[in-house]
Image 1: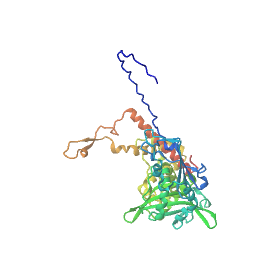
Image 2: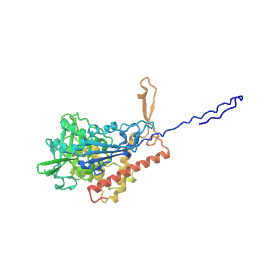
Image 3: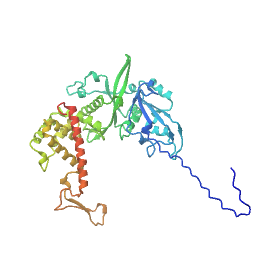
Image 4: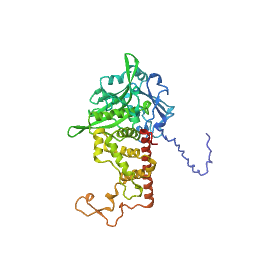
Length: 468
């Protein structure tokens, strides 16, 4: 490139300042794992490498990746994962156009996937395909010598929830494995990825704690007269607590029906078996740890059916319904809650192993079913639900009305030095809210009431054809 020459006698001109050009590379915005990962549950090797398997929808894949829940450094990234429903090993096929560090680094995909799948993730596709034959009887080998359970009615005959026929569930087995058994811990370690992917907010149980019990729901499949294979449909993990002086309590911590078998009655069947275990072993009660919304619906539907056939509960319901029908509750300043007596609550726990909190959930549905025709008494019923929701959220006004807490000087710990007193002329509530706050609170409470009424109607419709 030529340069312009200057006259030798002329004063040199100052060189023009060169403008420095600064280039900006594209900042990597990353990709959400939920958008680039597909997961399939497959039962035979021919389904691997295709989309013929059952595609599962994880609760949230993003939470397993980086601090901001994204994958960085890949263009055109696609990850397809196949999980064997035979051995519960997994294989991941990862493809992408290119990689580059756009300022956020390049995500270590292997490390991220191992957070979910652990040792079940096989790197070699051929090794994964081979498991369909080498571990074809994996579940059968685990359950073959374990305790088999079945549901029995009070008359000694086998029964099933929702009136399902004996033939429909004749090939089902529920097997109990104590976590003190090494086989139980080995099996559960392979199920952990499904727990993490499909159970919201769950954490793996401690397989070294012998107080854990694993219940497997399996279906027998006979290919040949001499070869019976067990297919895992679902499982539940329960913890057995000691209760002084010589009793125990059972807490259901995890329950999962595998996606291909959901919405077919298997979850209700498993709940029925667990309830019968609690009754037959005379535990104090059977509780559930942070039940998800859909499972709570299944559980409550099952418990309401049992309570409809339990005379002490029905007698209490009839008495409450009779009292409720006597007047317009919405016009009264003090509305009773129509709760069951302590004796009935205790009898339900002793006989059906339903704890108080769950029984009160069922109680509202039992009252609804008892109000026939419901249309005539719906206003009063909604008033009861509304008052209960207010008490649960805001607490009882009688306990807080007119009370205030003030700090007082003290030579002791300032944080624990206070006086509570009641104002003589104070209004109920003691807390002043402006009009907008009051309106917002009322709207939120009404939304909770509407949701509860909707849930009551759904369960009532499920257990009785009279109510819609």
